[in-house]
Length: 302
Length: 302
Image (tube, rainbow over all chains, first blue to last red; front, side, top):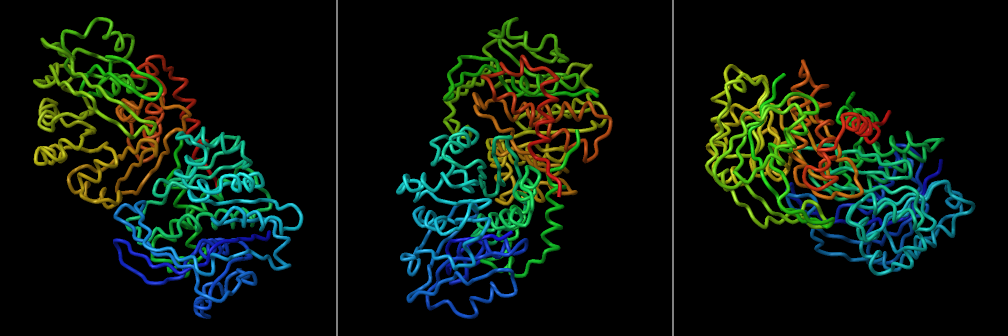
């Protein structure tokens, strides 16, 4: 079933204990769509500047990604620079240049408006709302990411879009900030009152937890000896998760759990190399092998 | 099979967001032995002062815990006071009074010397060594806990006892400190060179991970809405883990995984109330029900 993603396409300069790259392709919508395209067809909406070349566009070619919605605007593409410490959770932002992203007003091509599954990556909640308004009919599933900036600065707008959100995909710090609750189960109960019926908490090296009315489901992070670049882990997780769901006819607990595992698999591959390097070369059979490995990592019999 | 534990028996004064208790019974050997006694017979070696009353001793009665090795010395029992924040990992030590524990020299009663399974709780590595020297024959399994203090102050003595340790049970910060490695898989590889063939990393609210030559196994922490008092979680985990192992005839990967789950179950119950309050009233059927719940919490099918 069709899957729409709206979010950033960017250039990133990254520094980690394993090296340094300058202006490599990144952005939430990029990681998301490449990850999701292993499972389903993806409709991408975003904006790039005139520094975005044919070569940059190559990442989307030969994949099930429709970039009809990737707008080209005069100016420069969104740029982010950051540095990670030995602890991959220690991230310092060195530069954020919004550039053409500052004036981004998502416009869905006609053929995208019937998308059944929607992922609203981390952008201004007002813009997230405008995307939903362009969708014809009732989408089967709306999932949303957000961040501390919007939780603090635009709480009313965020609450408005949350009313229309089925699955909220955020990290543990954001969960606590949004709910004003340290305990994640109580935080989930609070968030359910705002709209979402499923909360997915991304916990970096500690894995991910899904909470809904049936209870909780936990997946560990895949143990890796070297995390070369944590950038894009959360967006790749969301891409694997939503891609798998969009490709499934049914959406019961078993399917959601499997989607959590595929999300974790995609997140774990993303961090093995800088930028999109690893996802670019990834094969479907590697995804399935690692999913089975997640089984070995967690399975026990009483 | 017989299980020996050597460690502290203490009084704790605890303050958490859920309340305050003064001089409640605690100590690693106490939590460990109560947790382990649900699975097997436990031989306890420790020391208390003359402020330790008949009433305090009640915790051990009616359980499979032999306190022949609980020495009484003139003076006061080990006392610890601490405060936890909203984040259960934020712990402030307000007082540590070693008292009779300062001169503790573990002496194994004759009948304890043939113990087949040994847990050396977190005490001076020299004393841990002296315990092993009193064991007759080769124990089936030696597990050990330690802390930053010994890792920094007595590295040579710690390395000596690690040579005789099969299973090292420590937290993530201790794992990193002992190995000088941030990455836990690399840290495990380093630690295997020191002696242990199995490393169990306790990660508090993030669960526990076991690493050995076969790979890794992860168990999440049981999601609780209220963590009343995190004290003793790690020792209760170790008690459930070792108790289950000691009660098992075989010791293969499936048994070790199950032991990890039972350890997590006991740790999760311990934190539900202050001090030993919850473990005191715990029933075996509650343990088994929660172990099954751990299954629901982690199970998926591809």
